[in-house]
Length: 284
Image (tube, rainbow, N blue to C red; front, side, top):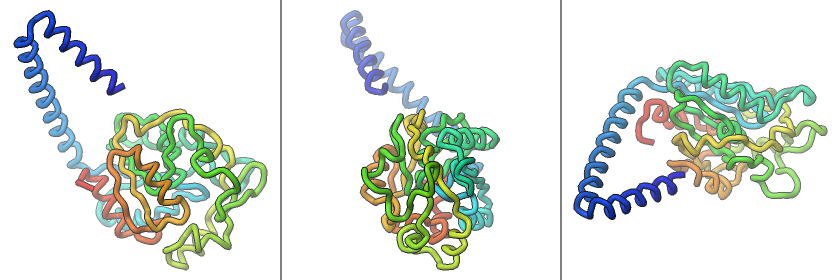
């Protein structure tokens, strides 16, 4: 779309030059450039005013997890005066036959974001990147941060983003409707770098993940029109780092941290530093 607009503007200026002459066309070009820069300056001025009030952070959990997964970092953020919320995915739960899918998760996120009166920054972890990408957000969502997340293009599924063949070693089929975490491999692969007591607590809370959530294509592509940041987790053993770097190509800003897949558990203070900048609009 941007390329088409640029081509159309160039065509119009060529037509003006042919009709009005080169000198007048050049003068019009200069006027257009000045107006465009003034408008851009006014926009950034408004943006700075908006960012004086921190945005609300809205967390999206990954597969098998719930809002409890973000509690360590939310406590740090709350002590700094940063408001945060998290959603409960329909695709996660104890009963495989009652699980929802990706579209239900998207609907939950959309309603949660719309219900927040303030500006919102979305924090999408792992599978949460599928949900964030597929959601058509309202104007209050000003930024998306992908945290070691799957980031698809429109009509892609999560399963299409991983290599063909057997499931990754940290998960296996539970039944025809759901997938479960392999607990024996969780500490080594899933929760590497996290405190042992936090791992035990997490293993007592994780649920099943619906198969349909992994096989449903995303109906929308939010990162096309909302600024985004991708945080590559270089110690991640769950989402391969090369895959993260491919996904990061969809974002405006890319940063790397030597964190494992669950930095909200392993590095809550460091992650809070990054999220506080996202909420206040500071340079990341």
